[in-house]
Amino acid sequence: MSTVTIPPVLTSPRDDAMHLHRAFKGFGCDTEAIINILAHRDATQRALIQQEYRAMYSEDLNKRLSSELSNNVKKAVLLWVHDPATRDATIVRQALSGDIVDLKAATEVICSRTPSQIQQIKQIYFSKFGTYLEHDIEYQASGDHKKLLLAYLSTPRYEGPEVDKLMVEKDAKALFKAGEKKLGTDENTFIHIFSGRSRAQLVAVDSAYHNFYGNSLKKAVKKETSGNFEFALLTILQCAHNPGKYFAKVLHNAMKGLGTNDTTLIRIVVTRAEIDMQYIKAEYQKKYGKTLNDALLLAYLSTPRYEGPEVDKLMVEKDAKALFKAGEKKLGTDENTFIHIFSGRSRAQLVAVDSAYHNFYGNSLKKAIKKETSGNFEFALLTILQCAHNPGKYFAKVLHNAMKGLGTNDTTLIRIVVTRAEIDMQYIKAEYQKKYGKTLNDAVRSETSGHYRAFLLALLGPSH
Image (cartoon, rainbow, N blue to C red; front, top):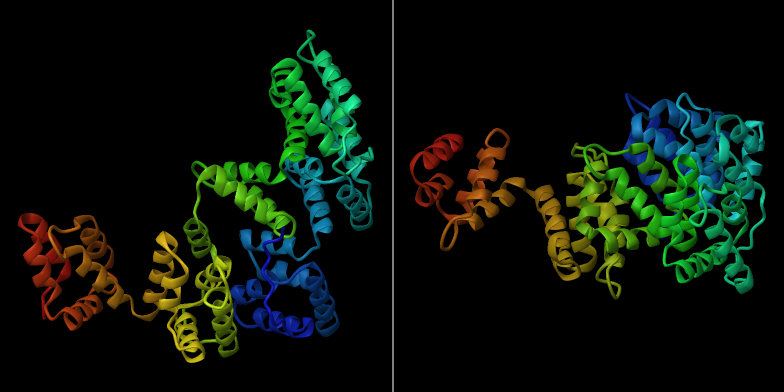
């Protein structure tokens, strides 16, 4: 199931092409405008936009995007503009013919796709790059890994749910005889069965193998094979069981530890967004316990936002209506719409959206958020919204809450004073005095002592 959100009221491909052309003008380009258009159009719509752009401006949109964008945004957008099959063919071609050959990336794409998808990839590969995919595999891969990829590309496989029970038992016994039962491994048997069986059949073989021998095929593959050959077999097997779970694990591995494997992250998100990203997200949350707040934080960290005072009035109305439709208008909440708008709009734009929301529906966005969301996700949305309106007022309230009642939340007190002292503390102090009728300095003085008090007061500066 796709996760691409298409606006309820679409502009025409011609208008989209004009807006993209406008985004390219001037010093630098308006990356946010490009993302707002292309990330919310499906493959057919993107193809029409490319046709209109070429007709209107006599240039290729992809080439213009390549010259205007940079780094990971460029990589992601240039892949995204293609339809899924062309995108897969492009990724495989880049993996097999780039400066650095990436056999794992090519293997992942080939071994995770259905037979009908593979046929499309092969046709597009030849028409777009003038060579057969099998030729590039012959040249770059080797040994059993090469044999498996070539067999997987050329062997027709049934795509339905039915299984041949007699064949299941034969295959399970043949794999045991070819691997764990003998000294050494008969790789050809693994290649023949893994490249020739449907996904449903292979899952049934795995179950029979476990029933007969008390072990899973996954463990047998890991024990009997290695390298890219092992990786290809495991990709085929795991995608037969649950593609969503497989890609969730690949994404987790790409993001865990120090640094992120951006190439893998881009490849998976861009290639699966129109296919099965909803299932991948569900599997990811189930396995790794990540919340919607994590998704919002990731989007907020990665999305470029304009920092000036100008607003797009048409976009303001669309966003206000989209938020109402995603929240108060419906049963349940479309959290992705909230994430998209709150992570992608400038502060000035978000304030204008809040005002339009109130004018249209007689309610504030703040109240709508409190009604429709909860927990850390609610907290994150409210923080973005309140800091869009008045950061000084927001932080004044946080400081007041940290010091009211019995005891003081020193961690919060330190965090706010230290991080805002060189930024906007004068505004925070003014908002604090206006709202609570005493100076922030006096409040801190009454709640702290000793050198700790002296240090915080030094950062706060004089009361007047």
